[in-house]
Length: 132
Image (cartoon, rainbow, N blue to C red; front, side):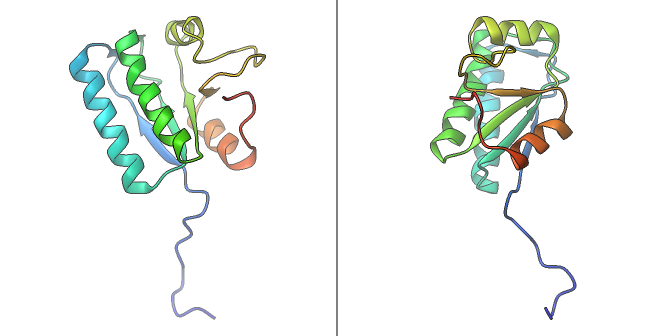
């Protein structure tokens, strides 16, 4: 029997990142998000990342760059990024830019789920499907 009543388990840890800004635009905010995301991924040594975007109602290509930088960092470590809580407008922008595919037909960088719980379950229960 272990000496400790509970041993930490770090296998299958999912890092949850949350964007609180309603409008993700501009160089300053995008750079700030890139730095914050990279620091948290490094701190947690994360390969499974959920980005909760339910507060985001508007995103520009500059804002998308922060997500793409996160994707490349996590993918480079053999991991996956799942976006969740996308508003219709944000989903449309990401779909037009071919970063997500609601039909699931073509490979895209990001997987999408409706909420944090579904995103976590996706990361813990199945391998990358359609993400590329």
